[in-house]
Each structure stands twice: as structure tokens, then as C-alpha cells.
Amino acid sequence: MDILQIKDLKTYFHTKDGLVKAVNGVSFNIKKGEVFGLVGESGSGKTLTALSILKLVPPPGKIDGEVLFNGIDILKMGETYLRGIRGSKIAIVFQEPSTSLDPVFTIGYQMMEAIYAHRDLQNRSRVRKIALEYLDNVHTPDPERIFHDYPHQLSGGTKQRVMIAMALINSPELLILDEPTTALDVTIQAQILDLLDEIIEREKLSILFISHDFGIIARMCDSVAVMHKGRIVEMGDKADILNDPKEPYTRSLLESVKALV
Amino acid sequence: MIREIAKNKMALASAVFIIIMVIFALFAPLIATYDPTRVDTKFILSPPSSQHIFGTDTLGRDIFSRIVYGARISLSIGFIAVGIAVLIGIFFGSIAGYYGGKIDSILMRFVDIMLCFPTLFLILAVIAFLEPSIFNIMAVIGITNWMGVARLIRAEILTLKERDFVAAARVMGASDMWIILRHLIPNAIGPVLVSATLGIGGAILIESALSFLGIGVQPPTPSWGNMLMDGKSTLGVAWWLTIFPGLFILFTVLSYNLLGSALRDILEPRLKN
Image (cartoon, rainbow over all chains, first blue to last red; front, side):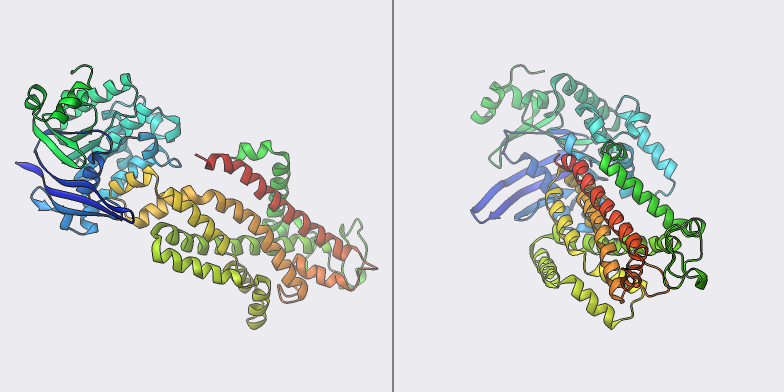
């Protein structure tokens, strides 16, 4: 059963300097409960693919193609429907946690905002409890204190845990992680990946994991697609790609990784 | 921020003076020594004394009490007029900044048109047309002074809407209205706070000018401006009718200006991140 089917996705930017084909005919499917990796260098179109799934590409970008989520083409749906999906059925965690949080509100406020956005709960203390529970689930140190802290008071690793908690808070079916550990240092990176392992095990989510680091992809993913200049050059099971890369680009990416976990 | 204000001596002195004026305004009945409209023919034009610390005017009314009640008028007109200006400014500025494109162009041309009007003369004309009630004065000052705020908000929102936390909010399913009201405006409010503080000083001056000319707050309600008007004819013999309201206008507006300037210094470096 496929939770996500992307058919010939094209995201073009009609700029005054010409047509930029950022995503140029991308197709792949993600099975329910699968961790699907999207690898490629910077500028290959990975992040735009993720944004295109949720129709979050700003003008002058135009999205074309089909994005079937649980069988429904969400690209054809209106803004209200999509807003209902964003943050609840499909959630994204971005690369840079420091700037993903609003600097003038506390962590607790923003987590509660994520809950209010999609659930019709009136009881403030119940919402607060849910927020604290999720902060605990992602193993933030001292959730009670963090609840009242402002983003600038927290470290990068903690902020990324908060972003992951906010993504999970409405029980999404599909979680998109766009380079979630790229902005963190290596030891924290390992911790976050451990946390993600735990979440994948516990929640049995479907995940689209975007990274430029083949080592991380190798560790986390079941299937892999390699993107280059807006196109998918190679796709398959992790084992197939790692052991028998057919394309020269894939091979050069693999060679650039020091050690595979 | 309060700590920062305390560190800056001028800001602290200004804030203290403003707080004293606010206390005058709020607790006028308790602080004033006499009824400000009470005519006392025994004490016409008496200089400052132990009974009337600021003296009395041509009708024997106690100047100090009139100053205290006048604080109510001047401060409330200042706050509410600026409040109206800020609300209108935030409304137009945020829509123009967030949506951009044609909407932005149209709204900003509208702002340019409004800026072409010489505000004092516009206010004079409108007040002469309508009756000079306190509400009309507040409304007219507010309606003619929102343009600066609109530009400030628009500028802040133009940069803020590109920030990641806005994208993150959108990804979470927030609507445009939610993003503008709950995320963009709270982040953009810094320069508006500065502008509003300076604006209160300006509004007080405008009200004083209008009252001095006779088309602002009407007697017997005391306002610092119409007390100046009363004192004009007796300036040679009774300086206390003019000097005291004048000093209070001076120090209040000065305090708001200094406070606004200090706020700008306090908020400015933080705005750079």
C-alpha cells in the first residue's frame, strides 16, 4: 500500500532570466511504514520536491504533475484542504532549527499553537499536558523548564528535538525530514538519529528522509532515490543501491562518503 | 527591556515623569486641591501661594487642579489618538507588506496621497467642520497620523515574511491571517513602539495647539492648551496662568521624545538579528 505516489512532478520557476526547471519530472512511491531516502547534492531539487508535495512553492514557481497521498491528488485540492493536511497528516522538519522557531514566543506557546491549529481542544491545561508529553517523547532535557524558554535560550540539538516534537504532535501519517541533522554537530547528529530510530520504531510512520549525506541515508532508509539536477538518476532498495550502483553519479556520491554505517 | 530603560538615566527620568503624569490623570480627584471648574471670586488672579500652589486664573479657578485634570485630557487624547493611528497603520502596512504586488502598490500610493495633506490644516478644517468634541479630536489626529506606522510595519514584514519560522508556520498549516497576526506583527512591533511613543508627544502638541486656537477642548474642561489660551491676555500681569501649563506641556512632550529615543536605542541592536 503506497502512502505517497509522486507522478512526473515538475516544479518550474518562470523568472525574468528564463525558465528554471528545479524539479524536472520526478516520480517515486513511498510505501506505508517505509523510510524513503532522497539523496543528492545541494541544488539538486530535493527540498523543492518536499515543498512541492505540500504545494508550498512560492511564485514564480509553478507545480505540475500528480501527488497522490492515500490515493488523493492533493495538488488538485484547494488551500483550505491543504492547510488541513499540513502539519497534521503530512509534517515537515526543516534543516535549520534556529530559524524555524518564532523568536518572540516561548517553546511551550509554539507547541500549543501547533496543537490548536489542527485539534479542536478548548481545555488549555490539557493542551499544555500534550505539549509537555511530546517534549518528553523526544527526550528534551527538563521539558518543564524548556516549555517556558525562548528559542534563543536553547541549543541547536534541543531546538531540533522541539521541531520534531512539533511535527509529531498531530500524529502525521507521513513525516518529511529535510536534512534534519545537517546544521548540527556530529555528536548531536548521532543523538538525533538515534531519536529518529526510536520514533520510527515506535510510531511506524512513513518517512521521506532528504539528505546529501549518503552515510546517514544508508543508516536510516529502506529505499533510496538519487537526485541530480532536478531528476532522479537511480532508485531502488538500499541494499541494491549501495552494493551495485548502476549510475556513475551514484557511484561518485558513494565514493565521497568516508565510511558507511 | 525595563532593566534597559533603568540603565539609561534620561530614559529613566522621562519614564518617571510620565508615570507621575499618568498618576495625576488617573487619580485627579484625589490629587487636585480644588474643583477645577470652581469659580472663586475672592481669589481672582492670585499668584502662587500656600493655598493655591500654582495660583488662580481670571475666574479664580485653581491652576494646579486644572493642570491635574488637564493631564487627563492631554494624556488620554495622546494615547487614544496614537492608538487609532497605530491600528490603522498596522492594518494597511501588514496587508501591503505581506501580499505585495498590486495590493502593495495601491496601498502605498494611498499612503503617499495621505502624506500629501498638511496634517495640521487638515485637522483644523475637519474640526471646524465637525464639532470640537474630545472624541473628534482623537479620531482626527489618529486618522491623519497612521502613515508612518504603515510604512514601518510594511518594511518589517517585507523582511520577516521570508524568515524560516514563517515557512515553518505555513508548513504547520497556519493561515495567512494567523501568520500575520500571530507571528509577523509581534515580531514587527519594535519600530512601531518607538514611533508610537514619539507620536504621543506629537499628539499632545497637536491637541494643545488646537485648544490654544480655541477649536480643541472647549472650556470649562481644562486642557493644557486652552489654559494657554486663557493666559494669553494676562501674560504681563499673571505669568502663572501661562507658564505652568506651558511647562507641563514642555516636560511631558520632552519625556515622550526622550523615552522614544531611548527605546529606539534599546530595540535597535536586537532588531538586527
